[in-house]
Length: 124
Image (cartoon, rainbow, N blue to C red):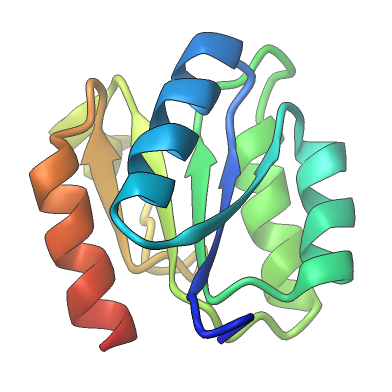
């Protein structure tokens, strides 16, 4: 925990969604680090060691989200990682998210109440 608040790293290439989600998470009492690309997300992860990570699966660069998740796993990440996907439940048919080291998937648009419940469940 950082400064008595859990730190959430949120990586998404949609600046409006990134900002709106950051504001809502901060209002819910979390510290938030944001990144608008997988490369920025990796740098933020290394610099801040977040307690929970949200990654947009389909960013502008092909496979950027899944590649970021793989990189985090190689770095020994212990924080829960969830992806955001417009593909939703079909993601299991495309890839085995558990093999990537993911805790789960949130479908876009994200149900914020569900996200906060998951945060509270995973972080205590």
